[in-house]
Length: 193
Image (cartoon, rainbow, N blue to C red):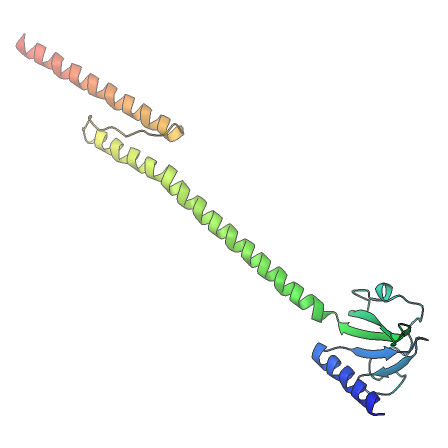
C-alpha cells in the first residue's frame, strides 16, 4: 500500500506541475489502474478514460491534438524483465502547447516588423541623402541665377537623372552667361560708335 500511495503522489505531482487533465497508469490489458486525481482504479473522475486500446502503440496514440482540445502522450512501462507492464498516459490541455507557440509567433512577427521599420528608415535616409540633397543644391543655384549671378554652377558627381538635370542647368547657366557677355560687348560697341 505504501508504494501505491507514493506512486499516486508522484502522479499527482506530475499532474499539478504540468497542469495535466489526466495522469494515469494503465495495466497491460488497457484498464486504468491508477490516476493522479483520485488514486482510485477505473472511473473518469480524474479526467482519464477508463480504458485504452491495449494493442495501441505509444507512437500512434501520442497524437498532438484531438477534438477535445487536448494533447495526449503515452509512454510504455516495463517491468524488470523487460516485459511491458503497462502504459503511462498524460493528457494536457492544448493551450499548454499552443500558448508558447503563439507567443513565439508574436515575437517573430514583432521582430520582422522592427526589421521592416529599420529598413524603411534606412531607405528614407538614403533617399534624403541621394535625392533630396542634390535637388536642394540645384534649387539654391537656380535661385542664384535668378538673382543675376550667372557664375552659379552645380557640382555634379553622379550619373543619375539628377546629375543629368544638374549638367543641363550648368549648360543653361553657361549659355546665359555667354549671352550676357555678348550683349554687354555689343552695348560697348554701340556706345563707342
